[in-house]
Image (cartoon, rainbow over all chains, first blue to last red; front, side, top):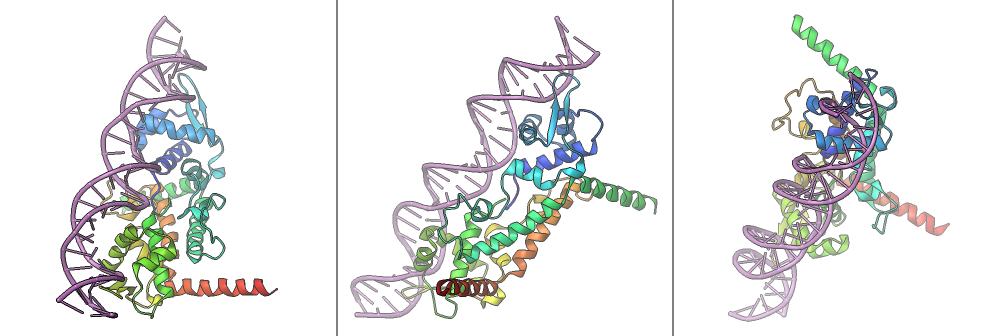
Amino acid sequence: MKFSTKGRYGLKAMFDLAVNYGEGPITLKNIAHRQDISEHYLEQLIATLRRAKLVKSVRGAQGGYMLNHPPEEITVGDIIRSLEGPVGPADCVMDPEADECSNQESCVTRLVWARIQESVNDVIDTTTLADMLEDQERINNKKNYMFYI
Amino acid sequence: MKFSTKGRYGLKAMFDLAVNYGEGPITLKNIAHRQDISEHYLEQLIATLRRAKLVKSVRGAQGGYMLNHPPEEITVGDIIRSLEGPVGPADCVMDPEADECSNQESCVTRLVWARIQESVNDVIDTTTLADMLEDQERINNKKNYMFYI
DNA sequence: AATATTTCCGACTAAAATACTTGGAATTCA
DNA sequence: TGAATTCCAAGTATTTTAGTCGGAAATATT
């Protein structure tokens, strides 16, 4: 029940781009270095994010990546799902079409998985990169406060 | 972000035992057959559940397994965690001790993982096998109703 | 006492997923 | 032209998953 590095690194990278939003293209090298991720591996992840239209790229020297929408308009759910696929504790609730389970309707276990999925989706779909930037602010303020007392 | 078959089969098996609670030992063979799980594999899972004191066993002919507590006192969280280990989207919130991440305190991404974890825990720790039995009742009633109209 | 049934135990394994690495082509700025 | 960068396609080592296999130990029934 963990996300893979795809989702975890992906969110870190996207948050990095959110922090630097509006400052022109940011190189993969810088993101990878700041977030302590293998550059080549991150390249694969950001390619996925680009295909999902969550980031845009500028090629060549002085190129790099930037968010394709303002931080308010990108949710954690957008990021996670583009990298990890559908989110949920079991196939029967993640992709009901491709579910082999015969008794979809009358399965009690499925109800439990559905509740878990719903609660996870609720969190990731209501948290935007802008919310995370606000969290960052709060943490910084608290830190400064702690420093001065 | 899926549970493995350990957690998924484990919950099905435990629900099966809940349905048959109070009727003496239930054989692994029957559970495995009803829930369509490999008998030998389920054996491993139920051994874990036994070590976690969630089920008790009776050896020998006419033996089998039964819940070690009434269904009201066993939560989905008990079952999942005994089979899957700590639940959560990333190590830093699942096992803060063994976390290699340096900035545990000031990591915004971690806050997101923490919220996801909290919401999942809330669901699995407030759902008991007895709740699932009630769900089953509701489904059956609905089915009967559908049949007679 | 013998037999059938059942749990218990430990080792083994094939397949899939994960988390990368490698090497190079294409593009753009200076 | 050359340096910096994104883009792309394969390859790979490690780990995890989802089991299998074989047999020992315990118990009820006959």
